[in-house]
Image (cartoon, rainbow, N blue to C red; front, side):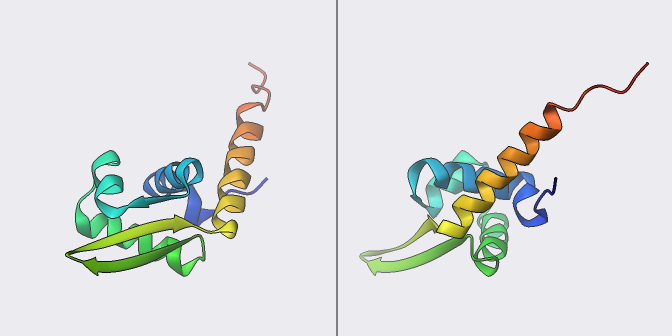
Length: 96
């Protein structure tokens, strides 16, 4: 059973959980929901983008907006991480 170091980090797991449920979200929503600074969220998104787990799209119609979207690879990585965590949680306790 393997945990994905990219996904397993608390903030990145949270980002993928939100996107897995909603497909996409705007940067300010993720920032507020996960209680992050702009720089912290951007750094975690950069890691997820580099891994191919999310994409970001910037638009500038009146005001700058960044939309974050989960990729198919991101969905698979998120589900795999959750499956691994479930298997870990189901391990028997060591003998006393």
